[in-house]
Image 1 (spheres, rainbow, N blue to C red):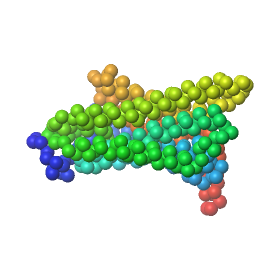
Image 2 (cartoon, helix red, strand yellow):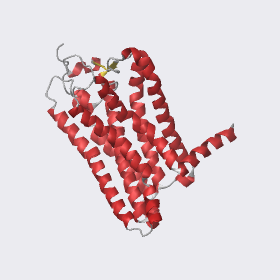
Image 3 (tube, rainbow, N blue to C red):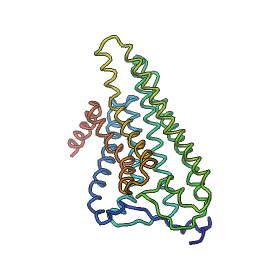
Image 4 (cartoon, rainbow, N blue to C red):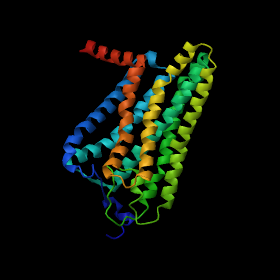
Length: 316
């Protein structure tokens, strides 16, 4: 196949991959995948609705939780069409611009999720370090500004990726190794030097996920130092207990990401099924588990969701 010129990119197709070697079982795999999507989307939408409807939940912690839910719904909605299309209909073909758009939204919402987790760690530090001035330090306008800042940063960092990829020529069969489009996968396709794309991708990873995770660790170092200064054992436990849900959310987000990175480098010769499942865990598990974690560990969220359902029953 000859090189595709920029003018013909509108007609360029990309072919996605399902679960290698298990194509005959795609129908069965569609059941747990669709269940995870429904749990993720419905669970996060319930959290957003509960926070919006209950004025008692209009506090910094729950507003940041709503932002986390928005980013997780975004990640799930970005991958759902192609993943379920392959599992249900074996629809592997996607046009190039559609693939670039999916890549942009997946990475943008993932970046937003990382930024919100950092904001939530700052929220927990303020709540423990200076509880009397908690709402004064984090008033609603500041929280909205932080949310908009996280969104704009994510969009600005990810916007150059599809633009640069669209400038490159493509000259061979364009088959990706996942059921969705990722930047690390797409830069393997061009028949030209992609060093600039690789450097930019690495710089974005370091400036977002790398820096965010470092600052989260620093925040928890400060939280631990503050907690150790609390005189009573009960007070220390109570302060730490307010961080449990967020710590779980951070682990659920970063541990699969680190696992995927290690797999790509240390287990290159592992079965393609293993790589596919690890990448799926990284994208699908946090949106599924976080609503469950916060619903179980956070009583006001449980009460807010229960209030939603009681109001619906009254309307019916």
